[in-house]
Each structure stands twice: as structure tokens, then as C-alpha cells.
Length: 215
Image (tube, rainbow, N blue to C red; front, side):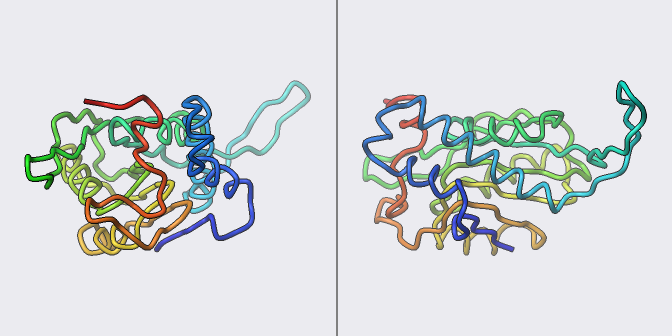
């Protein structure tokens, strides 16, 4: 199931507008903070689908009924661009375990590229709820390969993909290559990709905007 939350009037629409705005993008701190905010909103909405249990909480004046997650999820970030979004999700699921995967475009001299995975750190995800965070899903290949790398640490029970902006092509690709029970939570779905597989209108390179241009 695809949840495109930017279609509904909320403050999320403002954060999405600001990460796209080429003038506001010049402030890296604000770009990172807006990505965190988007992660927080998406994680909050996603949390409504998780399982909770009642607990007893002692206040200074008596006992009250509280709630907690039945099981903490595992949050996985795709480095480096996924870190601000991941931090926003972690602000909501602050007791979660965390995983990190490096997935990047390795370009050839002719301009074509392949996705390279060079690093992965993860707890055991067997039977867990896995939340994968990547701010932009263009072709979907990076997300799929990052997920395949994480399978070395077990098979999760549920999979959630969280992203600020995704392409229609990327979502269609993932629906064919990810587990059938994967659900997708995003701010916006853009309809076009350039010949170099950049999302249009998109926002540019999220990693560069957050942390500076790379060589």
C-alpha cells in the first residue's frame, strides 16, 4: 500500500515545499531540519498501524493506564543522504535499534551507473518490523539492494519504506521486487525521471544539499 501523505492538507506540505525550494535549499541546516520534520510526520502516521499494549503508569498522584509498543522496530538508513530523514524517524521511535547501509551510484566513464553496496551494520532483524529510510527513491534499485543486504541479518516480519519524495517508476519497481507486505510512506510521488534517473521536479541531490557536494 502507498500512503502519499502530502495529498492531505497538513504542515507536511510546507516542509515538502521548503526542501524543494532552490533558495531555501541554500541553508543546509534548514534543509536537514526539514528532512527530520518530514521523517517525524511520516513516522507518526506510520505508528498508527503498529501494535500497542496497555501498561500501568504510576504518577505522583496515583496510577494511570499507559501504552507502549508491543515490539520496537528496527530503523535502517541508506547512507549518506538518508541520515536526516532517519534521525526524524528515530525521534519518534526513540527506543528502536538501528541499521545502516551505504548504497550509492558508481558512475562509469560513459555516464551509466550501477548501485554499489560497500558497508552494512545491522542488528538481527528476524521477525522484526523493519523501517527503511531514504529521502529520494528514483529508480528503486538502491532501496532494493539495501534491503537485500539487510537480509543477511534475518527475515523481517513487516517492511515499511519511508521517503520524502518518490518517483512513480521507483514505486512500481519496488512493488515488483520487495516483499508483498511492504507498505510505502512518502510525502509526494513525482511522475518523471530524467535520462540520468533524477526525479522531476524532485529537489536535486539530497545528500549534497544536506552535507555538501562530493567528489
